[in-house]
Length: 463
Ligand code: C2O
Ligand code: CU
Image (cartoon, rainbow, N blue to C red; front, top):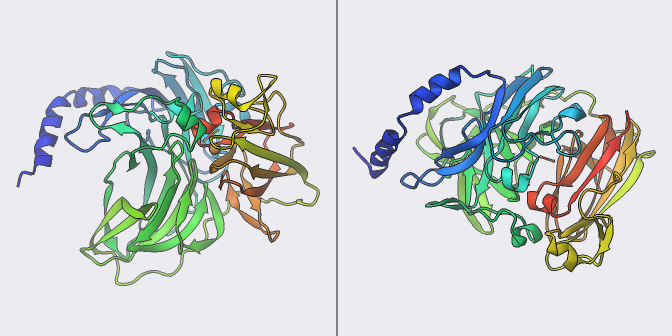
């Protein structure tokens, strides 16, 4: 049987003959190198041309980095792009000098330059790395990849799949649609794509067995898209969020929202019949799509297993001392439809219209963009509470570098450890964390056009 699809594959294979020499070449490259460079990959359906992207290691998502908890990670970023770049290791409790923030922890690496990142991995979990320079464009072009830190005591599953959820704004004939810095994306909900992908593929398909137990590591690396996910033919538990284990696995009974930069580790059993299909389902309003298809071929066992045990907790993650905490507030305003009355930009009071002329649309505590002074200065080990009030019409995914926090819930309880919190318009939420990691740490919206258009501040933890 020859389908049109395999004919196209044949033609593409001809065009791709230099594959072998390239492999041979890469075998000689220092394994510690992570090269940022242009690449061409098949994002659009077969038959359409490949899409030019910016990539780590020639693929999107970039090369998976996998290490063990307690390891020291070493990667030399080699910048083969035409623009300066940096690497940020999202969610890692990292040495501040390695955090990859241009202008705060390092200078951006110029084209042709290199930078050695070297740091310990104190925590197991699902993390990722991405460019932190002009990230609204560089991440949208593909500069991101998964960073998996394995527990020394791995959970009892049959297999593991890393599923990187992303979207692209793509013209299948001509490639990524430019206009990364356009006014609409900056002032509204961000750069939302027209094609959603899993591991770079719009029709990600896996083969599984009935009653097989999978660990799914889900990552949202999209610029702004909030993935609304459900399971079909799969049943299971959330075992970790943003890399950090839950105290008890949480049965998946409702739609899982995964905002930009957030991760969720699931342990699921394939409950669909042998010969049937299971899906990671994505909601777009009332419509559903298959974000990943699982074809069920055979049986792993006759019955489902019992509930999984919790993943081992990461060390020293307790959030205590809430009563005597250093308290701070973050007031978020701006964006389309509301704007702000006035805010300080580059040391000057400006109105919304004037800010908009330089592509700034958002303010935090009356400041547009990174202020001179940090939002707060904490002693090392001090507990910090921040009330965040979103007076805009838009959701924001607030991310703190170098630390995980817990939400202080209305009843006084604490939410799960996270590094990124999704807030909807007009919501007010409070987070608490122990400022254990010395340095200046960014605190920003991870909807990357929002970060570029004003939603950026930092905290300082004294040594
Ligand atoms: Cu995922 Cu400031 O970064
Ligand atoms: Cu935002």
